[in-house]
Structure formats: C-alpha cells, structure tokens
Length: 214
View 1 (cartoon, rainbow, N blue to C red):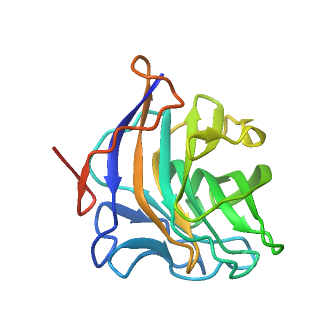
View 2: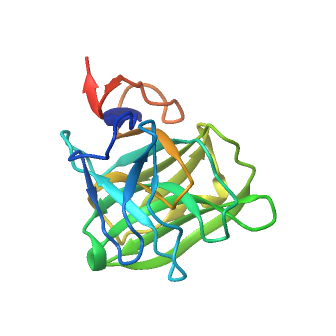
View 3: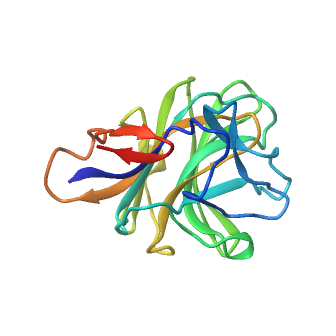
C-alpha cells in the first residue's frame, strides 16, 4: 500500500477560498486563515461539541480509501473543549455534516487527549481516545481504508485509536479546529496498492495558494 497525494494547502493567503467548502455547523463558525500563514477555527468550541470543519472542494479525485494529514502548529490550553484535527470521507454541512475525525484536545491537566470519532448527519459518536504527548509542529494523520481507521503522530501509529466502523463509505478529506489552535501544510490523498509501505509519508509537491505545482 502507498500514499498518493491529491491535494495540498499551505494556507499562505488572506482567506480560505474556493478550494474549501465550509461545513457551517451551527454556533461553530468557519475555518479561517490567520496571519496569511495558517488555518484555525473561528470560535471556541461550543458546549454541544460543535467546532469548525471544512472539506476540500478543489481539483482532484479521491478514492474511498484516503488520508488527511496536517502539521499542528499549536495546541493551546484555551479550555477543555478546544481542539485541532483532520477529517476523512467528509461531506454535507450543518445538519448533514458527515465525516470521520481525528483531533487533539486539551484535557485540562497539561496533557493532550487524542480522539477518533464519526459525525453522521450532524451527530457525533465517539469511537476511541487516548492521552498522547503532542508537541508543536507534530503531524497528525487520519487514514481510512475500508472499514478500518487509524491515527498517526509523526508517522507512528497510535494503536489505541485503531477502530473499525462502516457508517461512512465515501467523501473527501478535510480539517477541523477551534479558535487559537493552528494547523498548516495540509495534505489529502488516496491510499493505493503498490509503491512504498503504508507507514511512509506522502511525497509533498510544492504549494502555491493551495494548488499543486509541478
């Protein structure tokens, strides 16, 4: 198995733009560009566990077996509801928002709890969580292959988060965040047969305004 990058974004511009579709969850705001160099959510998370998400809407075709990867620039202890993460098989908006999601959240005691969950038509279901010692500039990757879903920190699998779930079968990769929790250098693509081992990172093309450049 191998990664094949389909779309990338360095967020080096003033606004998120047409390559992304905001999922517009009530009270959660949108994903925004901060300081023309990074992305984050518009608001702090709401008590209902809502937070901003966006799905890739630009060029490129995604298989059902796909990954979403981002560099986590900051994971601020702004409150126990604040988080930053990535999504796979995303579609819909507001009450139809659907995707798998892996995210890192402040647990209130100086450590970070990493979660994997699913959202189907706006309803969240927790699948697994564990405490992981994340640091600034670590990479977070969510991989969905068939009914299997895995989470990686810096290309090392977090085995406690490996789950099986068949509720979502298709969609596109994306990102999630609350205010002040920044992500950068997003990469979404397909998982295909052949090539290098699955544990290897994807080849990153050069980025210009969220588009691939040869």
